[in-house]
Every structure is written in structure tokens, then in C-alpha cells.
Amino acid sequence: MHRIFTKSVASVYPMYVAKLEKKGRTEDELVEVFEWLTGFDEATLRRHLADGTTFQDFFAQAHLNPNVSLISGVVCGIRVEEIEDPLMQKLRYLDKLVDELARGKKMEKVLRVPA
Image 1 (cartoon, helix red, strand yellow):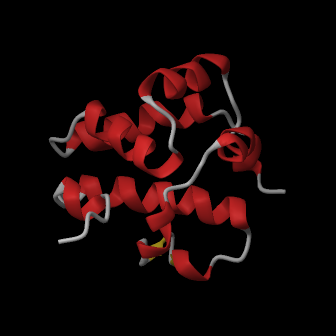
Image 2: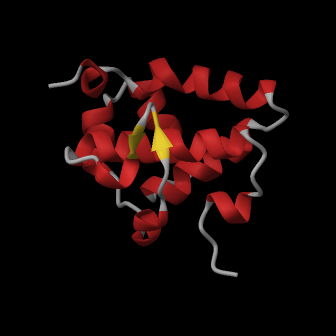
Image 3: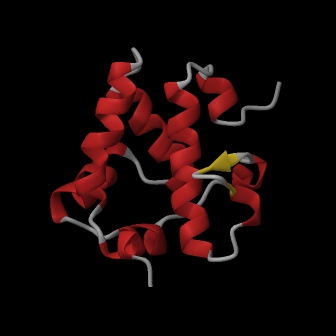
């Protein structure tokens, strides 16, 4: 099992916020990405952060967006659509969305909104 699976979402969340704020994006946009990906509303996300929920438990309770299959590209040198471990793939989907937001992509593109 990968070490990241047993890390709390709350331990990584501030790093996501810092990365995005450094690039002129907001925590509200990060919350929107989390909501889109996991189906959790902001209150549920905040509860998971406060409770120290691990990534393993966090994604076990999530209802992934039906459009996650539209997320493609490379994270950490690996194509997200080719990752075989389902939990690692979900984590990399999140990383990919955060990366796209940090690179200045429009929210509609990040959230795979049909044109």
C-alpha cells in the first residue's frame, strides 16, 4: 500500500491551497474542484478535513463525477488514464485538476464542462 493512502486529506490540503494561491487562484476554486470530483459539498469536505480522514477513506466515501474519464494527461511522469490502482488513479485525478487550475486553465475546462 502506498503511504499517501493513509495520509490525511487535511495534511495535503494546505499545500494545494498554497500552490493555487501562489498562482493567483483561490481556495474557493479548490473547493469547487473537490466538489466536482468527489460529489462532497463544502460542509462534507470541511468535516473530512477536520476529522483527519485518510485519502483511502475519503475516496471510499466519494461519488466520483461521471466525467472523470475525461481527465487525461501526465502527473508525476505517469498518464493518469493508464494508472491501474483505482485509488492511486483517483488521487492523480485530483492532482491533475489542481495542476490545471494552477496553470491558469479556465474552471469550465478544468471541470470538463461540455462546450
